[in-house]
Amino acid sequence: MEVLTRQHYADIVDSWIGKGNIIALVGSRRVGKSYVLKDFIQRHKEEPDINIIYVDKEKKAFKDIKTKDDLDTWIEAHFIYGKHNCILIDEAQEIEHFEESVCNWYSEENTDVIITGSNSKMLSGELATLLSGRHVEVRVHPLTYAEFLQFHGLSDNDDSLMIYLNYGGLPGLRKVGLSSDEQVWAYLTSVFNTIMLKDIIERHDIRNIPFLNNLIAFYADTTGKLTSANSIAKYMKSQDEKVSSNLVLLYRAFYAEAYLIDVVSRYDIHGKKLFESNEKVYWDDLGLRNLKAEGGMDSYIEKVIENAVYKQLCFLGYEVHVGVLNAGEVDFVCTKPGKTVYVQASYIISDESTRQREFGPLEKIRDNHPKYVISATPLLTQRDENGIIHLSLRKFLKEGF
Image (cartoon, rainbow, N blue to C red; front, side):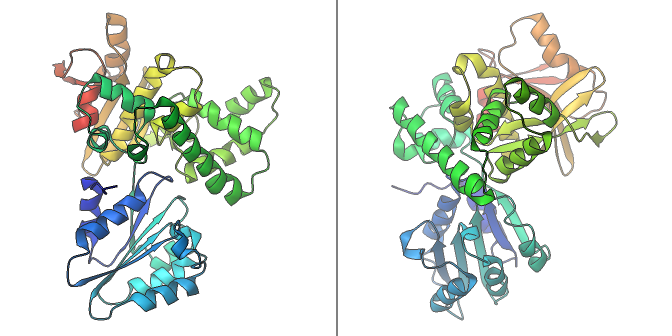
């Protein structure tokens, strides 16, 4: 199957080539990191001055590369001195002490190294120490709505948006196709089970697997709600499952390390400080979230919309927090260098009470940063309401602000 270019990531990777940094593509399994590497090869393989050395730990041909010495031997056999060598290592964390090899080779003249990994701690510890900050981390997200339309050859309409909100944005669905609901959910089940087994259960030697499964299902059903480890432990006790708040925090960290979920802290808009408890959880992929949730789309559409808005904000490069006001809560406080925006996410704003709930908290913020309400209200594209931009969900997911 043709490798489609995800232009956003192609531009980022190309912009760092030749600048003396290891480029690390991180994100969940099956999110498309491997295809960013394959696309890089496809776009650059014919350039006469570039020599590409590719190691894919998920392929049988590379099964014998298990240690840094094995990796060094492979790279040395394919390295061409006098050319621009680009060393690409897919799922680098599967190679023991890969960081030592990577650090040695990237220091060679006219050499770039691009690695991928499915664990958020891959770049912590020894690798970070050895590199002393000489690496750049690029988070690869599931397909945006715009990419989803491209990958599946769909038109931009409400039907396509609902398919995206239901099935999510894992690139592998392009090969599976969207015509069979049964096959889509079978594929998503396979991906979810692989993440749980390889990146959580085996990596951390989990013994309490029933609670591991129950907790991730709980996070699916409480997407976008403020929760604390203590409240979850009390809830589990009411369900005859005795666990400590520390175990809740530990397992939540394991999900986050595997990029299944993101944990989003609260931000005091007036006091300009972060709170350390009662965070919200959002899922990396909408399809995996829906797979583990109870009920159908009609019962959790608001949660899915809020999660979809959160993921688009992350894709746009914002650091995202939950906003806290004396008089209420703002869904998202979004910041990046030199810019802050406030965002409310809603399903349909059809009456005055809903309007007050969504617009009211934004109206109470007395600074001049842009403020948005994003909703799936029919026939809406964009309009200004007293300085607050009411933006169509479909427009935002396709084009951003």
